[in-house]
Image: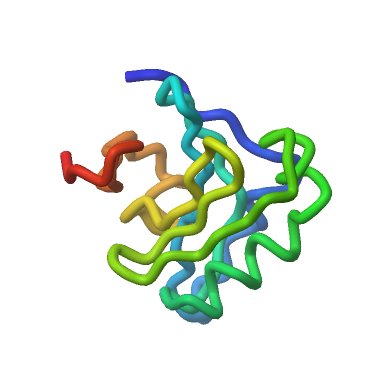
Length: 110
């Protein structure tokens, strides 16, 4: 499995008394993955808020500002990059669990 890269400060310190936070990642056309951040809302609003919080870095990574949001399955497209929930939580990432349960670039589950 390829090592997942992280944007600066993508993993804040775990807070045991707070809601579960879900991982959002950018997946490139060649299958490379970059963690964008974490959100407590596993919804369209949570995905867009996470993207907005990392907007400048995300646009620099993707190389374009052409953004489309799709509903089924929930994801966003920025150029050839797909931004989506990975199926991991912040706690999974912190504890080092490497299982990636998200969809591939073509939307097929692993």
